Image (tube, rainbow, N blue to C red; front, side, top):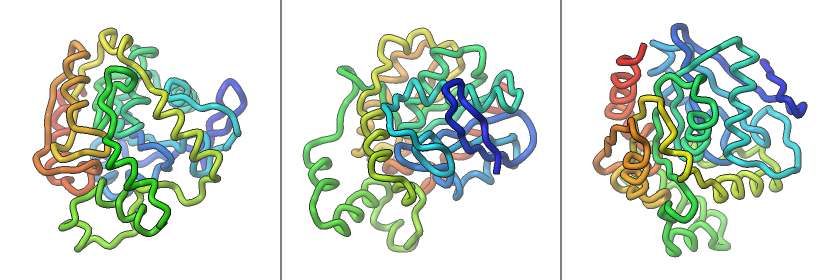
Length: 260
């Protein structure tokens, strides 16, 4: 097991797979690196993929203190420093896209090309999920709430033929306090004022049928980042990168290939 240590002493577990130019893959809220298991081979065939477990998740330390998406971005830098990687391409999905926004804004020299998947600028300018979606996830019947989350991630037709396990619905090893810390970090994200400063070539990806992180956030991001291209994946929900892998992975790979 490999670890990097942050300036504040937190040990972060990280994982490497593949060879080539470095590519950082950043997963969603309250998830560990297994989020990428189903598609990682697509990227590891061409790149040295770097994942890590956010503080609070996976095999990383879990301090009971406030987390922020900007702080998670600083943790990415600690991992890159441990590896001696000066610059990497970055692909972040869901909360990982929020982390990637700060990484590109605060540490532009560390980011080659940037891909923001199913993400949002957050804050007053971001479009929040509806009350109906919130209530579906907060219902007291745990099994029903879990089913609701799965149907926000994937279409029912895909779920019917892919019974799981699903690695995109949360790290089961996380303590409750860490889950709450992750939720607050994602909910507190607001990068609107920083987005115009992003200089990395950027691709914004989103599923047209995503209501978990509403699809209307994609054009908001693309319109705010000067270099951004926008690509919507028809019929996809939040986990577009997995269910629509045959569309999404080639789009990302073609984009990254233009930048080495």
